[in-house]
Length: 89
Image (cartoon, rainbow, N blue to C red; front, side, top):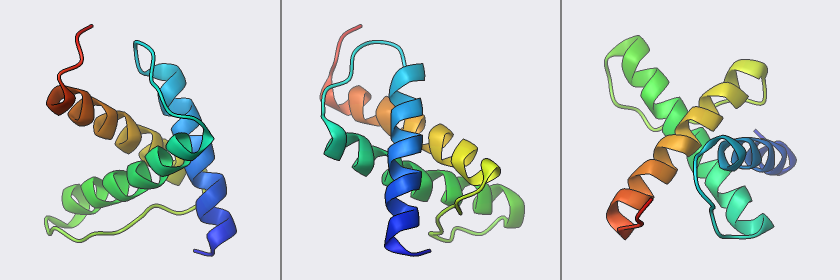
């Protein structure tokens, strides 16, 4: 995937995940971009693990399924981050 597709997927998935996830998240546009890219890797890796049974670090593509997996991965990344950061709800 080229860099422009990564930026679009990252911004889209990060913004949707921040809108869905309960509470208020900090971080500006760069934080949203990084969250979306991390979410794409987490979502792609979990999907690959479920489909094939092997752990392979892969990312999702810029498609409807890819965006959905990236959003779910970004929400999982937010959940794990706030569990370790000790944020109270």
